[in-house]
Amino acid sequence: MKVCRLRLLSRVASVALALFVAGAAMNTRAQQIVPGSMDVHWNPGAPDCQTDTQPPLQVHQYEPQTFILRQNLCLSAEGNFLFLLIGDQKALLIDTGAIADAAKMPVAKTVLGLLPQRGDAKLPLLVVHTHGHTDHRDGDPQFAGLANVQVAPFDLDGVKNFFGFAAWPEGQAQIDLGGRVVDVLPSPGHHRAHVVFYDQRTGLLLTGDFFLPGRLLVEDKAADLVSAARVIDFVKTRPVTWVLGTHVEVNRNWQLYDLGASYHPDEHVLQLTKDDLLTLPATLAAFNGFYTTAGHLTVMDQNRVLGALAIAALVILILLIWGLWRLWRRMRRKPAVSA
Image (cartoon, rainbow, N blue to C red; front, side, top):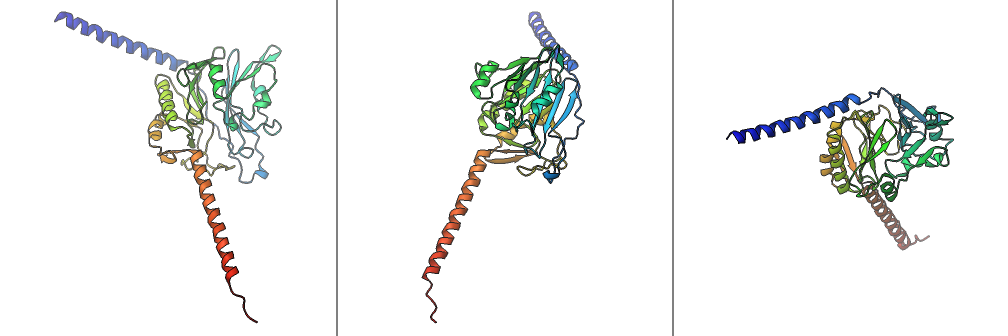
């Protein structure tokens, strides 16, 4: 009996010690988080873009080594957010936005202007992407051929090889910027090569189009569900200051703006919370594969919705042509009026 009690006490002590060590590790992580500010009013675009005077790029300094850039809605209705993270040895730019023309949208010039000097040159820059949709990579040509700049691939094979994902979409990767480590998590569902970034310095979870205050566009529900579980499992043991996507498509009441709207009055804030993210699996589980609203979130398969609209337009066109043909036949059969 005494031996059993001793074994039980030993197991309890082991569990308590493990919980203490885990808690201490989490507290250490939390203490190391560098605070930042989201006290920013993003430019809302304009009802008449001909009179818009807002800059092409709005730059917000979250903390001394972290910048958030927002593209002008009048120049691109996507209104993309880009993220610049600066380490001791390298800087990381996440996404390049929706416009290639540097004269119209000077992404490279703006980013390079934010980088610190290292001797006679700017700090080396690595450009990566949350995923391969064109509004997240159209600015890539602005960085082509620049000294100390590397642009990572955005296609699936390129992403797997660049980050070393041997068993995609399982596993994790890391980018070491020197004194600043960024975790990379596979998150296909919106796009087959989508990834989410977690910045250990600030606790920011940068989710691209995987999770944001707006339309959650899903092209593969099964993959998205697995990705949601993977990302949530990752953040359970890590401090998350904010969850930041790459678009805002709703107002403060979570009402959607029209697709392609260049004016966002009373826009919702960019930042969401870990608790917001935790609602994603249930929302995806309820997704009917076409269009679903659950709580604040709207989930849709854009390809299916566009396909349905195309079919509806085709049916209307066929009915219109058939109606005109019937009218023409009736007019031909109508007897001529005698004089």
